[in-house]
Image 1 (cartoon, rainbow, N blue to C red):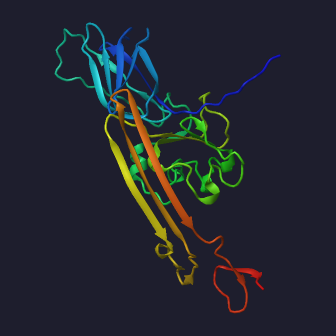
Image 2: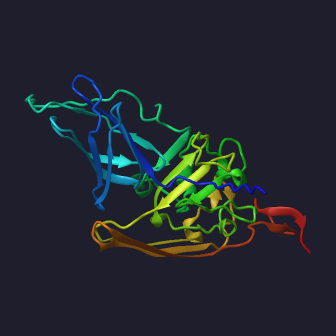
Amino acid sequence: MLTGICLNAQITTASLTGKVTDNGKNPLFGATVTAVHQPSGTFYGATTRENGRYTISNMRVGGPYVIEVSYIGYNAYKSDGIMLSLGKKEVVDAILNETSQNLDEVVISAVGSDLINKDKTGASTSISRDQISNLPTISRSTTDYTRLNPMAAEGGSFGGRNDQFNNYSLNGTIFNNPFGLDAATPGGQTDAQPISLDAIDQIQVAIAPYDVTQSGFTGASVNAVTKSGTNRFEGTLYGFFRNSNMIGGKVRDTEVNRGDVNNSQFGFAVGGPIIKDKLFFFANLEIEKRSDLGSYFLPAGPGVSGSNVSRVFGI
């Protein structure tokens, strides 16, 4: 008797790849490549293959990273300020010069586009922590950022598909609405956010990936990863409030019923080291309270008029 098991995984990390050559463009075999995540001190390493290429997988997203390449008989190469995006493979090539040569300046240039290259795994959009922090948001929801994908449409649709066909994941765990009702994510029917925006580090929207680790959807795969602590203690304390007095009540000359709306969000986030360079923590708590009318429409009747009056007569 044979039993088949199908597992679907989602992207939660980033990768680094490149080629190490000498100044004659000859590949260097066995060169040492190290990458250090500066905020946390996390260390990654690899050696180049016969063709001079290297690959470091399962790296922590964000940065900045410091990349160093060393080889016996050659000057070391160093590059800092490297930022890694969720689900993307960053390319860092290095040219090493023999120690017998004295050069005042080494210039490394790259030609090409970050959006169209052979290392991309299909149509996708990555939203970094800086974009989440700086771009405006009305609902404090990830949907305010996933719409940056050119295939996004109203209501969470991607590529013309209903949002129920999307796949949502958080830190690699499937985060879909298991009941398949109106909302695609948990809590969506009450306009509640399943996770605080202050806890999210990066978001990736993949439309048509040819990565075998991403499957189980026909609209889009929306992958998100949460923040993690670093060697520095950091925290935020925030609060947002909105009521009907902050909502417009007129469209040109037409009066619009604003209803009785009251929405508030309060929370905090804190992270830092437990053991420096080894163990970290991050915690977030958010409370949202919302009250509004179930419907802004009124039943039709004598003396009742306005744009929000139903054609159904009330008794």
